[in-house]
Image: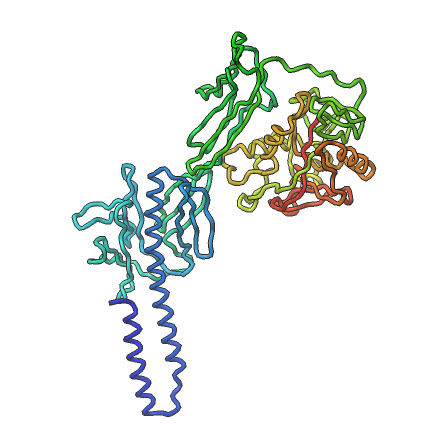
Length: 536
């Protein structure tokens, strides 16, 4: 007998009462009775819907376990109105509910034993038993899933393991408080998706790692002597397969000690003396990623610096030189916006690049994008991570230190801030919420290599961006516009910096405003303009 039989019996009784009332009174008010009928109808429909929902969650759990045992990973989890959709690396997905119907699910769970998950349920006294088939055998989760129903007389959940022929009472009522769910919690942390069942059992499914490869060098061109081998301390993630291509006569392979690249010997006259090493990664779901490193046999030419100190508005070239008039024989990559010691506030910059004493260059190329697209999910400041992991670095925050110590707002700390943010991005725990604006620096450096005599590209702090002022922006823009493929700055623009902003923490970042030549603020996931900078 199904749940709807309750409605039929109730309707029959209600009809009898109505007829009796009609024979005794012509003014009978049936409002209360009708409300009772509507309430019972809604209640039974809700129970039937919840029963179907729980059966669906059992099927989803079965599929999740199958994915786990097949080494399929989770690409992402999307929260929906009624639960979560889990998207897997093989292109499939499952949906689970969030328990907003305010009822208690049956205490079905899974138990792992010897690498195999089996169906089980939690008794009313808190003990756990395996669900067994008619022969008394434990039932693997990848086998037949148990069926569930709500007994209409007792209100208890019942389980069947024989396709609905027989049913066992779990002594668990189907009614409970708001928020009860077959899945008690769903969250990701450190590259793992955690699925917590109603009894507290936790299932861990690996998240799909982002495809990434870094050669471990910031050299635009890696120079070799003939026959020389170099071992690079590379980093790589997310790959199922790796393919390496190389110029003729070169060797490149991933060994235990690192990525080993060997130049051709001098006697090999057919070998290429320069070219590109490419590493191609393929993920389990078919996505691909390619990283490239230029290599050459020979020595990098020494560059003679100009015999005069740079001036604000000078062109800055890819070889590390500068000039007041554009030299068409060289590649201009930026404009000098400030002269002086760029490491005056930054001991880390001074230690890394003691030769950089001339000033600051702003890139001639402009971009737009977000600072940290997934800042809401992260829910903290980058500076909080820095304080724990890099306490020797200065704060990235604006207002707190400004009020207390008159700090980062008046300091040139973009290089140091960028190093801290790079370290944040490299921490596997932060793989889901990288600082996008800094993640783009390696690709930019491949496209526009920073000279060896410079600091390399970094994201400027608010102090470094404020070196631009109303007196020099117009002339600097003229220089930007004269550089091939260069972009003039927006005179009414808002430019992202490496300085966080506490007033809208943890999602705030400080902006430089060219309209008033002062600071402002924005959410990290809002799109704004930005440029990279280097010290030289």
